[in-house]
Length: 213
Image (tube, rainbow, N blue to C red; front, side, top):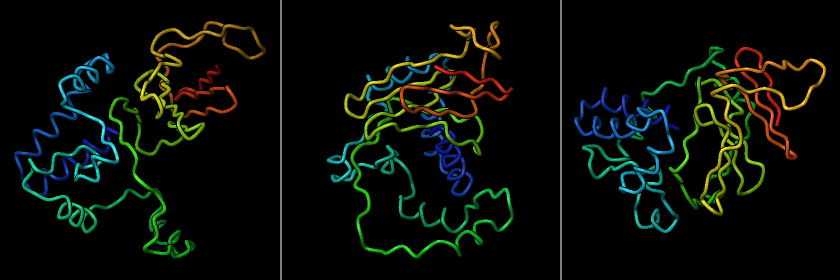
């Protein structure tokens, strides 16, 4: 997600004053400069500026997030250590992390719970506010639905292809008349929550909009 990528890059630059970080930060931000995100992504992929990372590449040492550590003057291990020591997570309720930690069971160490398979950079989710949740849904092991700007997108981990399911940037009006439906519809809906299940998609907006498909 670009929100956290930008945040991390700025944090690294502040901590170490590295000119190398500026190049990485500009690469992340460049994808947000165009109104058509898909065009930018396709252009970047065709020029190998941004690429997916497979399990085989990760085993050969490629960073799973695509961060070019070899171009930076800090190692991944050093940055990780510094971030753990200095970065403070936002808490809406003070000390909530400490309290919840007491209720958590101790995790057994040494076991392998997950295996990395693929990191795809071909589709980017858009989170309008860092406290929002439920804007990415997985309906199966390989079907993912997410918000990307004003579009609800579907991405398949099998085909590595994405397609637009719903676009709310323009005028969205009901196709059927039901009690309570706003027949004139909405425009420029900012989706704040999303649910996808059993062939039904429901999107909610910041102004109380409710869109079903």
